[in-house]
Image (cartoon, rainbow, N blue to C red; front, side):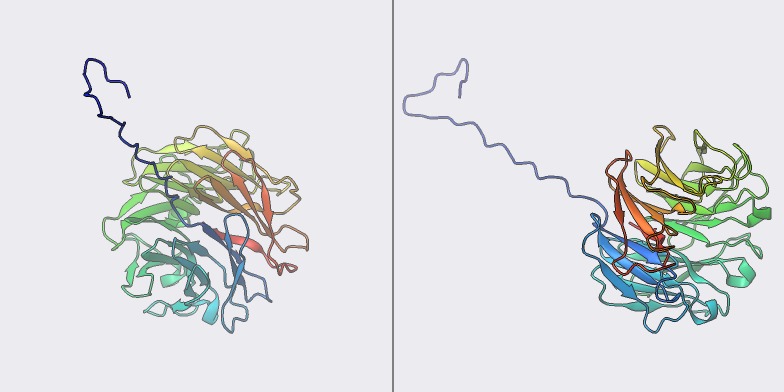
Amino acid sequence: MKISGVKIPAGVTITAPAQESQAPPTPSGPSKFVVGAVRTNNFAGRAYVYNTDGTGEIILDKPAGVTDQFGTAVAISDTKVVVTSAFTNTNQGAVYVYNTDGTGEQEITASDGGGTGHFFGSSVDATDTKIVAGAKGDNNYAGAVYVYNTDGTGEVKITASDGAAYDSFGDSVAMTKTHIVVGAYQDDSSQGSAYVYNLDGTGEVKITASDGASADSFGRSVAMSDTKVVVGAPTDDDAGSSSGSVYVYNTDGTGEQKITASDGAGGDLFGSSVAMSDTKIVVGAKEGANDFGAVYVYNTDGTGEVKIAASDGAFNDQFGKSVAIQGDKIFVGAYVSDDPDGSGAVYVYNTDGTGEQKIKASDASIDGNFGFSLGA
């Protein structure tokens, strides 16, 4: 070690201080994803949990399920897997919570019963501590959502302050550690709306599109991060009938930004599904007459469009019906994909569209609809 201008006495050695090692960053989010297959096992339905590389399959079955469509909606956190069965008990619905290894099953039902056609579990999302479940059929389809601790306690029921019959509030939901967003795509003659709440149901903020029109279905899909909300309007008509669009907002409903596909066309239903991280937005599109399907990836400001299609896509695969994102990976459901017919598949990509990996259930069956729902 050389020190200029300092005389070092004989016999004294000076060594440089040790450099502190830098630990690699800890990945955020779960290292697994979950897939719903609502028609597998004669419409009883199943859910499947995988590592993000497609290994380590765990199969979840609803006990004594008959035609309950277990896997209607799915979600996953670092510690829990949540699977809904919105058609159980004459469509009253139920939510099931598991550890990520498939153990510890717990059933949650709404304390007010809901009755026939409640469809509790029509949508779901989860964090490490909370679960939100939609019940779009509540109160003559005005709709409701319920928030729970992951052990099923602490129920909070939320309804829109201006809710009305057939709004379908709760058909789509998303949550963070502090907020919930709820879609009501049939509100106001299906112009649609979305609502943001604190986890205890307070602080309601209603969001509508500044250019909304009847039958846009704004709120058919929703997603959120800590700072942003994304709302899909798949039957918006900017690029032709039902070409579709998505809108991005701050969580207080300000800062609206509209995104449409650069190659949008009538019938695409762009915005049928959405997902987001802190830096990216993923949008599913039925994609017009051929029904191959596609997904689009954007920065949260709407720039940097990347279009992704399955390398083996075919007519009516419904690629993009469900989407999810975790870190630098995107998950896309193609629930009518063949091999065998209608068995379904999930595709995994990097956010730039590279690195395609196709995942099929080990027990793939005709019309199983693997990929109908996704959580990551």
